[in-house]
Image 1: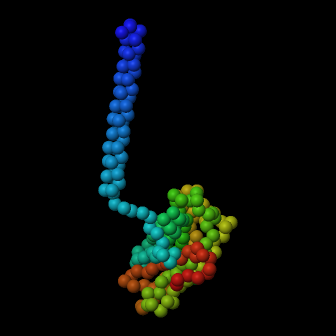
Image 2: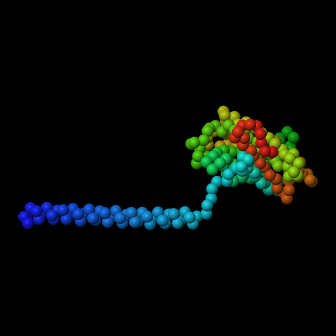
Length: 210
C-alpha cells in the first residue's frame, strides 16, 4: 500500500468517525426532544379540561343575581363570568347594579352589557352589529318577562373592537323599579334571587326565545 493511499484511507476514517459522531448527537437530541414532548403531553393530560363559558344553544346567557346584595349596597356591581358567543366568537360580560332617578327618587335595577377583548377578535366582524334583547325572567311560568331590546349603533365605541380589556358598558337605564321587585309575590324574585337573560340575534330575524 502506498503512503498516499494510506493517507487517503486515514482521512476517510476521520471523516466517517466525525459523521458518526454527528449522527449520534442527532439521535441523542431527537431522543431528548421525544422525552420533552412526552412530558408535555402528560402535563396537558393531567390538567383539567376547561374552556370559555359559552352561550346556550339558543344564543342566550343567564345571570343569577342575589337581590339582597344589591339592596344592601348602592355602589355594588354584580358581574357575570366572561362568556363567548361560540368557541371562537365574541367575548362579553353582563353586569347588574342599581340607580336612583334624581327626579322621582325612585330606585331601579340597572343591567349592562360589555364587549370584552377576546382571543379571536382579529377574525370577527367589527363593529358588533347584532340586535340584543335583555329580559328579567318571569319565574311564575306565565312568560310575562320584562324585555328591553337594542340595535347596536355602529358609530359608538361601545360596540367596536375592544382596544383595552373591555369597552364601556351599554346600560339599560330605568330597567325595572326596585319597589316592585320587593313586593310580596313578585313574579321576578325567588329565594332572594332574580335572573337576567340576554339573547343575541345573530340571524337578525327579530325573533328571540323569550
